[in-house]
Picture 1 (cartoon, rainbow, N blue to C red):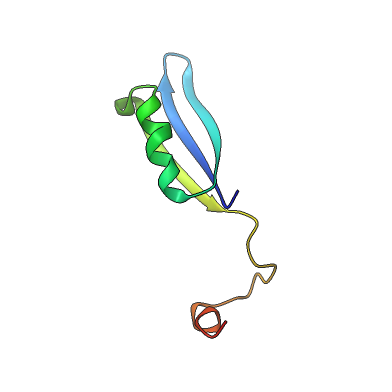
Picture 2 (tube, rainbow, N blue to C red):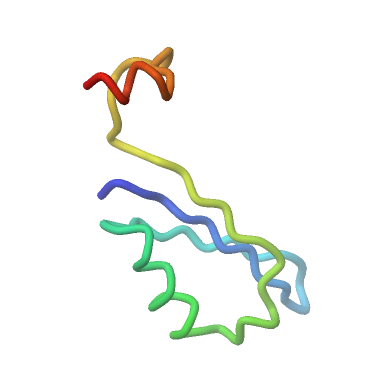
Length: 65
């Protein structure tokens, strides 16, 4: 998996965070369509995982790879 998404839903008991591992970032579409209802979503955060080991890699350096 290359991405991890956390979808925060509103519930009667407060916010419920649901994590999802994604192969492609476009896969989030299927997850959101499956529900719960998208109007209950407070936010979606998407993080890159299993990436290059260099925390200092810049956009310019990556273009040269």
